[in-house]
Length: 436
Image 1 (spheres, rainbow, N blue to C red):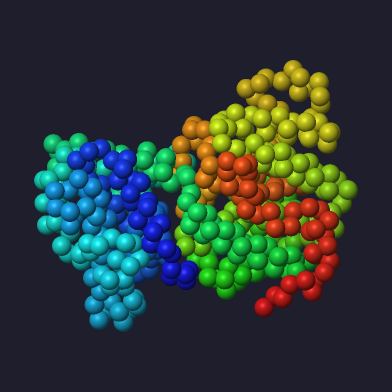
Image 2 (cartoon, rainbow, N blue to C red; image 1 turned 120 degrees about the vertical axis):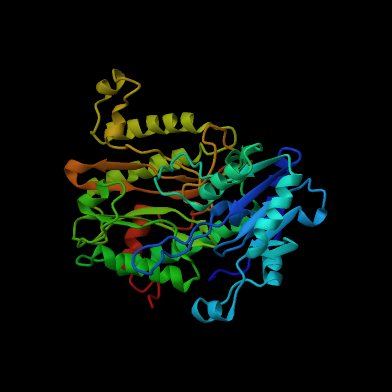
């Protein structure tokens, strides 16, 4: 791992929170993600299952965590199983956790090798009244690919058909959405690295560079600052490409007079940052570009103030839509009369702002949460309004990451340049940052 060691108290506290939410007499089982094959004898880079990481900090394939808070044998209240290393594995793959290292990382005191899993698991199941299984229940998720937790859940159900099985996901939706101070610090580090990358590319961008060259500058800055990499596939979209919401080709030349929309974020210790900035390729906004940009910025600033405890996400999006509506009228994109008589179920602003304003952020860039629950202190949300005018080749989105607190919204990206004059000044001064 590139990131610095994480205080194990984070994972100890997280396990206490989860265990305190479990049904009496139950146990819970959490598996690592699969090592996913690509082609030939290759695998995609391994990425740990977020819930297992949140509970243990263990960042290694073929790991299993069992929680059994009411176990009659105290030794097995928390159990971690790891892949046992060997001389061959050490030569080909490098270092793996020792038992003592896993204890130090996670705070779990009982650690076994994976080949002991079946026998111990069978005993624990006979002592438990019911069992929690962990499936991917993010409501944005849909796939035909079977994954390890699902496969293991099916095996358990077949082997122990008389047991009651519970869903772990509803507990995680409640618990993971409220970030501890340690988690906020990890997100801040991801944000800091993202800020460095943004300031770097401001010095690099000029007419004639290619989108993929900008992507290369971003990942360079990420890796030199101990980020794992991108928190999601970066969007580097110049000109009309910025009107494609999930444009990821990043293969076009950036031309003078065009805008460049960049949506990217570093991943640090599995925690994500999510930034969007839109800048002029030649360093100077036109009057029209500036007017649209400032309209988006105004919407973001007003939307940000709504990210407070008690706010309902659906109502929040409706209120942001009203702010956007007014800005689009000012820009001449919507008629005031048309807005007054519009179908409220099909608001006209959706032609130019067709996505939501905010989503939860944390271990996943679209973090697990119950979006129907009121916002509460400790939530981290993105705030990312945009205006997309395809007929003018203008696509502008601005995005910051916001921590909800009892004292109001705290912008974790407030130090990242966002005003028109800030961006133009930085782009005109090539000496303001060392690009190495």
